[in-house]
Amino acid sequence: MTLREIVETLNATVYLGQARLDEEVTTAFASDLMSDVLTLKDTPMLITGLCNVQTIRTCDMATLDIVVFVRNKKPTADMVELAEDNDMVLIATSYSMFKTCGLLFDAGIQPLY
Image (cartoon, rainbow, N blue to C red; front, side, top):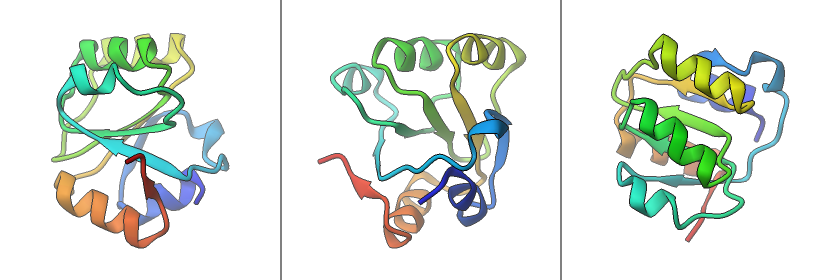
């Protein structure tokens, strides 16, 4: 599934990474616990409701470069700037984490575990 299809499926807004919308994504991980995120390796997409600069820093440390914010959370200018420095994609949807995960699973995105 491409990032563009993910954005359409989630009726989402792209805050950063428009040039990467044709990239394929096959797996995702959903969590608000950044300690869980730090255990991940090579997972392209994180789904989270935790929307702050620490989320971007944690994703950088865990080599995650696609973040989908749920529950109508919107990244701040500082978050976008830091994510841009790390070549990340930032997407936001108004859907809950549960609905977001369900829609993506139905569309073919596989869970990490």
